[in-house]
Amino acid sequence: MLRTYRDQAIVLRSYKLGEADRIVILLGKESGQIRAVAKGIRKPTSRFGGRLDAFNLVDLQLHRGRNLDTVTQVELLSGYARPLGENYEAFTAAKVMVETVQKLTESAPEPAYYPLLHGALGALVAGRIPPDLITASFLFRLMRLAGWDPALHSCAGCGQPGPHRLFSAEVGGFVCSSCAPPGSTEAPPAELIQALLNGDWEQAGQTGPRQGEQVRNLAGWWTQYHLEQRLRSFPFLQKESDEYS
Image (cartoon, rainbow, N blue to C red):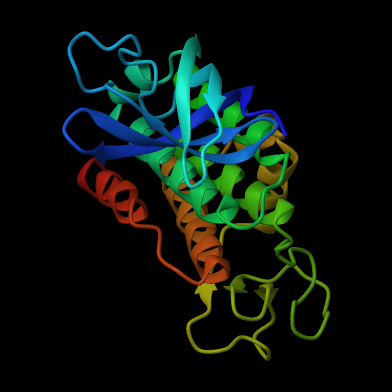
């Protein structure tokens, strides 16, 4: 195996190492999750600059290490960090996305995660679609790629044809009143979730802000249930919508 390799990657997060370095976690187009050291990045004279900020799309060269690789070259392809940092709602949505991808790729890389995340971040920057809908679409699609696709048009418990208004992550999607366990929640129409899964923005775009928040929260609940852990960034997205509603 070659000790040096190149890949396109999206920066998921980074954290300090020592006095001048950072450990950077990226999603590589070919390599899956990459954990690497960016040496000297916190020095004012660093050649990396802000290219390894979270959300940026980069082309990079790395040297393989035993536990961590080392970043040797970085070229910025799409600078998403700055425009996302200027829009709090888009920023918090992006935080949810990269956190979810990081958790999913720790043990099970999936090539389709990369273009999905790239497209979602680009949509947030473009600003033509509400961040709530982009987040919900991303999470439902990501969970489908991971093998968790909700039952939308029939009861997840007994198969009774819908439409149904209650949703249970525990049972597996929409449920009839007979199969609904405690904790089931009223959900937005199955047609909206289907449109988000299909990327049908003409239909999904007819959704009002309240229903957008509702489907985003449902997608977050569905995701956290199947991850079997909470997303630390998700409450900030909910708090933002509460403050500005």
